[in-house]
Length: 77
Image 1: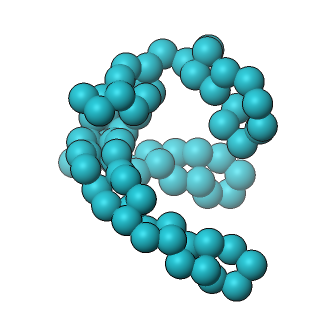
Image 2: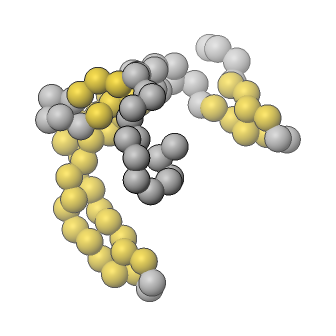
């Protein structure tokens, strides 16, 4: 959905706005809002360094694991 060009990226997604107006999808494990602090050439790419403005752990903090072609979560603590 987000990797394609054009279209409304958030049209079919439930989301809220951060205090600064950035979209935060519902039911995410965490989110980070940044501003561009520096852009450095890195070969045929650009390395973009972000300054963190706000962040939060919003959902299940257990990591999502991809193993042997399937997704799983670690057992609860």
